[in-house]
Image 1 (cartoon, helix red, strand yellow):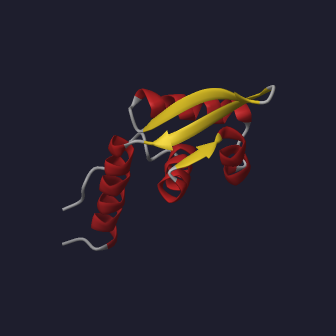
Image 2 (image 1 turned 30 degrees about the vertical axis):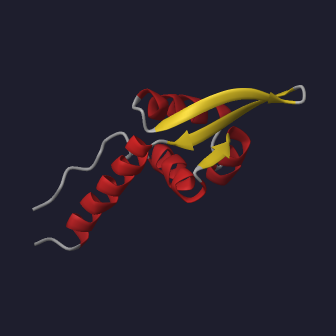
Length: 95
């Protein structure tokens, strides 16, 4: 039986953001933008959707005079990612 894929994580960019954060626990906006090759505007929208879902936390600060946005994966985000990967496995190895 196939498990339902989380529609929030089924977006390529949102899945990429979560995947980066799973491996690093936290990353700043510039790093994520570079790794995903996304536009700042699109990435901002997708980060906000993940934040609203409780999958990541977002902290805005300054490094010197430069604004810095840091994203961290939350326990809910880790759980959602694990469930998503488990659901993918159900498609790869149907019972």
